[in-house]
Image (cartoon, one colour):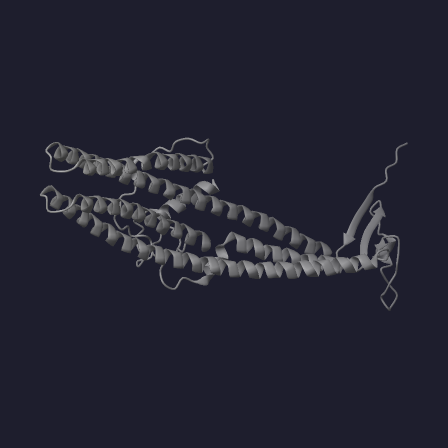
Length: 373
């Protein structure tokens, strides 16, 4: 003869404990999702930074190699004049020294390029290796002022709502608030439905017995009588954690506004510096051409040529660094506003948008899509 007993166990959520616990769990899940998005945004910014740094180093290497070629020609010219007796050996030695200075710069730039290539390869999920260059990946206007995308006036502060770190902080606050509800519910009795064979439990049938609706303690009525003080402490802890989450959320908002302000200031000032540096390079090129022409006809001293060439070399490298800083400030702004400042839907373009001739925004968009994949 066979017999089987079945039991059911179900707890009534009178005080919303499980509803608030579900809300807290959902907020925790969203926090993890936003944390993942924040990591992706950091990866996109890191790849863009490494990419622009690598292109700048390539540009500086090209500047140095061109300078080496120019100085080598000047050494040959000086050597020929020395053989004819028109210049001294000091002029030849000085020209050779300036050539050596430029040549010594090349190995260090090549070292930095190798490090940047390894860093970019690792960020792209590959082993450290060289990065293949193509014509489209080179800076199209070497040492010429490039038009960087300019953020339009009147950007809404609601853009910051897209920042994953702010969304994660907001969900942390939601979870902390829900945990307060869970802690409050733990102060009240928990009613369980337990029965054999599916019958009604005595705890449920006797829950509101009598006209006064007073509580009746039965076998299925679990009241927090064993550790009431502990439950109160849990409530105080949940309240403190909620206040902490609120303060962290407020701090995250303040940090977001500060980062946007810093990025906008950096973009503007670096762009102004780049324009001024470009003017210096143009002037130095003109001065170098004039000094060399006058030296050829004997109306200028050798040191005028040396000084003009050295100043031009320094100015060109400074312009390249200024261009890099301008690009990196745009990457910083992209990260600060949560992924760019375009508010229109994809496929639509604002008629007054400044064209992105540097390829900054398209690059970041492509990196975003790759990170999502």
